[in-house]
Each structure stands twice: as structure tokens, then as C-alpha cells.
Length: 531
Image 1 (cartoon, rainbow, N blue to C red):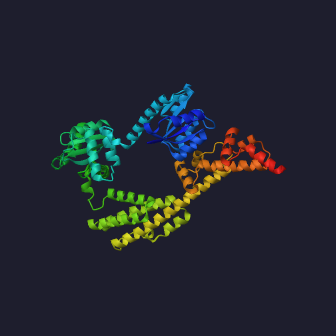
Image 2: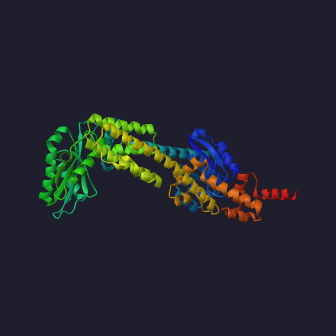
Image 3: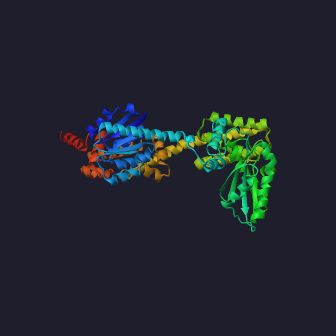
């Protein structure tokens, strides 16, 4: 069931739309109605509807301006216009805000129901497309690029592996899922006799012409190199891997007069590990230097219980836990990591490597959020003052690292609270000094203090329980009330002083806020003075 806000200044039409449309039967539920643009914007911010159905011309904020502001505070809300204005210029303005429908008055309830049914179908499609991206057929390049360059993560790795195999079949990498394939990545760098990189897209065909004689493969050109995913059975890799890379090097020299360097990863039995294989092949290529030739990562770097990718994964998880978990989760995870290293009998050098990476990562976060006093505390930490860990047991290392990470977790949590209060105070200060400007808005304030409107809106709501509009309107109304009570300024002058160019809009807001109109308040004050 999708939620909808209806906005129209014609009360009779608005009530008819709300009451006579059978919303439930077409998949909608009305969560609010508004008679002007400012009410509509407030409702959108508070109720977060899936659809805003609005007239294009309303008091105070037009439908076009409303669409612009809704896109800033609630971009996920779809917008449909219903209007008696059929000028093409209005339609053109509507297009830029990705309007889902544009309907013209007069419109019958039956026709409006039909169009709402169409709109519902469009929203269904948007939801389906977003949540079920695996159904979209992708080509080989679209499959290989993220597989090798970005990696693949899933909560259930076995299920994730099956999804990758399905995608590989869909885009033609495999003929079917029934195979015993293993995978390796080969990175080829081609250079002229002066050592200058001359690898081009054309060299993909040259490399492939060799690979096709030995194994299944998929290759593409990327960033001055030819990247190849090699696919074969274990027996085929054992028999042909060293042959095919030699063939590429020799053919490049013999036929094209060019030198090449090749990096080869370890062989893996999972598609989900092909990103790590790509990183290994790239690292192996780095060992080539000016000499070129073929370099296997297995020859250059011994496999150990803790590899670079595993360290990256641990670091990423610890960063996430420090930023947003409970302390118990962080301590439990660190305990699991150290238990795993003990089981795998990871060397002291490997453990030290992980320790340094974790400390660097935690310090990076701390320095990004901490103030001067907290940075001093970080620098005094005994663990950072002795970053060499040759002495002591694994247990001592675990205790020290856990203590440091928990301290960081507490410090970051405290700083985030402090930062939220600071941002809120800055916002209140800008409202205090800038309420008289018609241009002040959530977007302008967030830009001035260098945070996103979404983040600032959430911080304000959390710290004050009010929205930015509530705070701004409240300040303007309090100033207006004081001016109405203590000065003889004209109401038009007061409205302008408080940031309103439209006196009628100001009067509407003042009555909504205080329960009485500006003129009525003045008459009341005069009557009290004469009594």
C-alpha cells in the first residue's frame, strides 16, 4: 500500500479527490491533505509519502517550486501534477523534476482513478527495479568489471556464489552451471622497446588469439592493461597455464616486436574471489619492474594464514563496528579474529601487519572526527607510542588492541554527539541572524556549514524534535509578534522584516502559529490599552 498526500487550494475539489476516490482499491492510502504549498511541503517532510498529488498553481508556494523543494528534502517521493494550466512552459518546468504524471483539469473522478492506477503501476516498476536488480540481463563486460574490479560481498557467501554463476550463464561467460571450473586472473602490460606502455584495445584480440588455444577466457582493456579472466578445470590449469603465458610473451615479441610483462594470480575455485585474484595479479605485475617477463604471485609472495585481502576485510569490518555498533559487538569481533589467527597459527609478522593496519585505520577515523583535546589523548596512548609488537603474547596483543578500539569507539560516539549539537547550534545561530532573508532554507544553511541537507535535517530533528521549517517559522513568528506588540510598523513592513515577500502568506502563517491574525492581535492590544 503506497501513501499519498493530496494538495490543492480548491477545497471542494480537494475534498472530492480525498473522499470520492476509492484509494484502498487502487493501492493507495491518503496520509494528509494540504490547501497550499507550505502545508504540502510540511506534510511531505513529516509523513514521507510515496506520492504527492498536487495542483500546479497554489498560494504561497507554486507546484513547480513545491516540486523543487520536495526533491531536496524527500527525493524518493513521486510527484504528480493536476492542473488547469496546459501551457507547454509549465510542462517543461515539470519535466526537470522527474514528474511521474501531468493531468489537466477538468478531470472526472473516473479518469483520475484510471490515471492513479497507471501511476501505481509505475511506482510498482520503480520498486521492483530497485529491489530485484538480478533480473536484469547484463552483458559480459557489465559482469566482468564489477566482478574483478569491485569484488562481490553477500551475507550468505554460498548463495552469493550461486548468484554469480547464474549471472555468468545469463551473460554468456558459461554455457551452463554444471562445470568444475577454477579461475585465475592474468594482467598483461605491453611496451615498446623503449619501455613505454603501448597497450591498446587492439591488444585484447592479440592476447585472446593465444588464450583460446588453451582455456576458456574473457578479456577486456582497462587502464593501460589487458585484463583476462582465465577459466579452466584444475587439470587444464596444471597442464596449460605456464604454456599459455609463455606463448603470449613469445608471440608478442615475435609477431609484433613488443615486450610484455604478465602478472598471474593464484588459482581459486570461487567466482566471488576473483577480485582478490585480480589484486594478486596486479601485485605480481608490480614485481616485473623494467625487466618484464611473467610473474606469478605464488612465486613472489608466499601464501600465509593472513593475506592482504583478508586484512582489508577485517579493517573494513572494524571501521564499520567502531562507527556504528555496540561496544560488545566490537569486542566480540576482535576476539573472533584473534581466535582465528591462533587456529591458523599466523606468524608474528602477519599479526603485526594486521595490528598496524587496524591502528592506522582507527586513527584515521579518530583524526577525522576528534577535536584538539581528543587528538592529544590519542597521541598519548601507550599502544601508539610502541607500535613494534615483537614482545608479549597474542593475548596481550589482543587485550591492548581491544582496549584501544573500545576507547576509540567511545570517543567517536562522544564526538558525534558533540558534533550534532554543534551543527544544531550553528543552524539555530544562522536562523537567529538570517530569519529576515527570504532565501534562507535547509539547503542554504547546510551548504554554509558543509553538510548534506539530509544529514542536517536528521540532526535537527534528533536534537530539537522539530524540523528546520518549524524552527525558522517559530523564530519569524516570535519576532513578528514582538513587532506587532511593541511597534507601530505596518503589517506589510513586518512581514518583509520577517522574510515574507507575500503579506497574505505571512498573515496565514501567523494565524496558524498563534491562533489569531496580525490585525486581530493589534485590535486586541489596542482594546487592552484603552480599557
